[in-house]
Image (tube, rainbow, N blue to C red; front, side, top):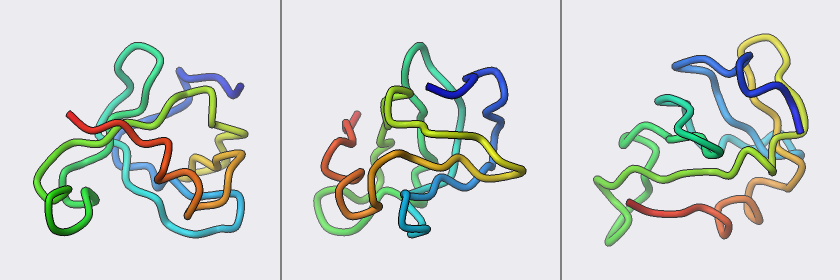
Amino acid sequence: MADASAIREHMEVIGADGVHVGTVDRVEGDRIKLIKADSGEGSHQGHHHYISLGLVAEVEGDKVRLSANGDVAVTFEEEA
């Protein structure tokens, strides 16, 4: 797992395949809280989603790269 202290607000979260998953709002405990604008459509719209820090492969520049592809990573998202 990458160093969570290197994750900052407004960083882009991308899957291992380079697909945009979301944008960091902040780190809360062992999860990354994504901004509401990246919450999807339909019943998912307007809710914050969270990604486990366990899925973070590395932090490079202004991007947080996950160890899972984007389409798989969204299935691990938690909604609040």
